[in-house]
Image: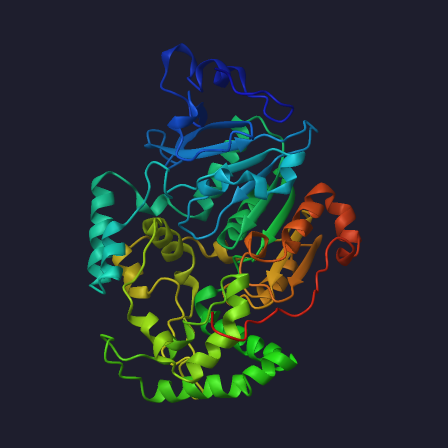
Length: 481
């Protein structure tokens, strides 16, 4: 059964006839695309209402070695409802370490499918790819509060015994994978839609293959020159203060939680000096533990944030019980996260933690991956050019949530400095990955779709005519559920 042929998926004759087999009986060529025979051979199911091409990108683990092992990356091409001839949109998921493939199971959430094909690719090393750098040893150790360093070493040893070169799993290699996919699909250009770490991958791709990018949507940007590990503690504190101050400006919220900022941070300062001894907890509760209880990762979390900050200030026992509940884990390619972060992020960090006078987050770990875990994973650092700012004139929409502590709006502004044709939109009351906050008002996704329909016109227009970019303040929850 042949691939569906559209104006933008004209596949090379060799691939259609033989799924990329080289001529004259040679070994199969790389890269190539292998379409699945039936949908049940693919790791996720695309709803029957959507026509899709499902398959695997086959490429090299190490492009510098002709005989390198092959890797297999899942790809779902969800076809537009109308054949308009417009370039497709490719999705780059966050993490690093998350699989993008669940996105293919919910294509109805992405309005550009009315007129553009939507490509979802599982990045190398993530779940459903072969190999997948899953580390159950590490997940188990975290859940059991056991020796995580030993667990990381055990995971590394197991993967390397399988012949996997862990030094080949990073953003530069993933960007090359993307262009391999573009090549085998016969595409001249496409648009990139990335969230969180996916925005970093989009920028890395644009730096090398910018002539192949029609436009970019960067939701919650993490540009290469933003040093996460140096700033994450301060970013969290800043977001918490913004929420408290926003609450103080609303009469109902200010009345329910008077002097919230002062009471909350005073409590953190007290616990920073003298950690709490809680009977059910194995270790003393720190100020960082308390700060971690504030939900800022979703729209509903932001609405609950002042209430939770008030409960922290009062040391609500029911809330504190969450700190010593068994750790929950999920399917996440921790090995991929280690390989990316330990090669291209932590090596270039000064690891500034808020640890001097006025340390309101006492002991907050600023590194996404603790240095001792990176030492156990032991992959070489990439060249420092990997953290250089990306200079480009690709039309780009940058979306940043007002209260996002992970990728704050200032990093959107940092990216915009060297993206000559870009617009930064700050989402009022927004958290992380605003376009995918399904419990929010949907404004961010409306903006993304409007931009992808006509990038140049969007950049020249008033975005508030498309969607109320600055709506009313969040409707904060004032009473416990």
